[in-house]
Length: 229
Image 1 (cartoon, rainbow, N blue to C red):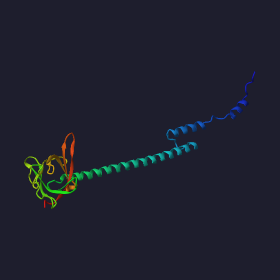
Image 2 (image 1 turned 90 degrees about the horizontal axis):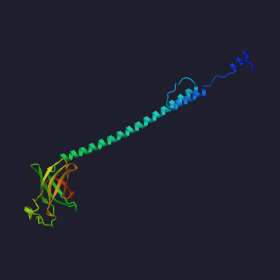
Image 3 (image 1 turned 90 degrees about the vertical axis):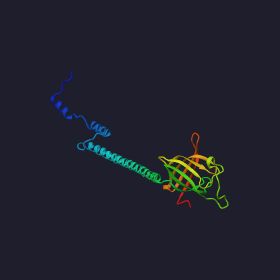
Image 4 (image 1 turned 180 degrees about the horizontal axis):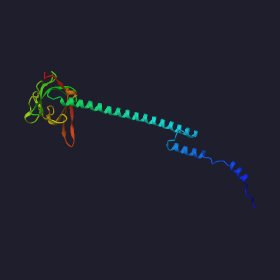
């Protein structure tokens, strides 16, 4: 039968016993806290202080990166908004200038196929509608100086082209003048047409067309002149 330890033996055992270690567990918890973004107090164990400094440095770098990205995104957004505003303003000014410019006056007609000047047309406004009449023919000396509209129909047939009304019925719309008619003396045909003043009132765009399912036609660009001389 084993003998019970005496008082001397108990004292020796207690003196030689080691306290339970908490270093590994404490460090494990500190690492876990840093990985999950938990703020670790800067005072205390040296290992805890090192982990805090590492965490604080990493968060500072992350904040700086976020600030750089935010500044870049904001600058890019501001540049885009500024570009849109400038383009829209420029377009608005151009549209306003063109809208204020009147088609009333004298215009040099340009053939859209040959690019040659053909005549001087005077446009007037009567009771809210535009009418245009040929004031002068720009013909070569060898050509007929007083041609007539052989291909025209109705009351315009065989009428002198000089003085002939070739535009009528154009009404003011939100963009230019439309719902009018344009006569081609060379063909003797009448087309529907739209008129738009462009280039700050210095040029006029005439679009003559026939409507089938969609508008089919062609455009001419006329140049403003001071008078019919």
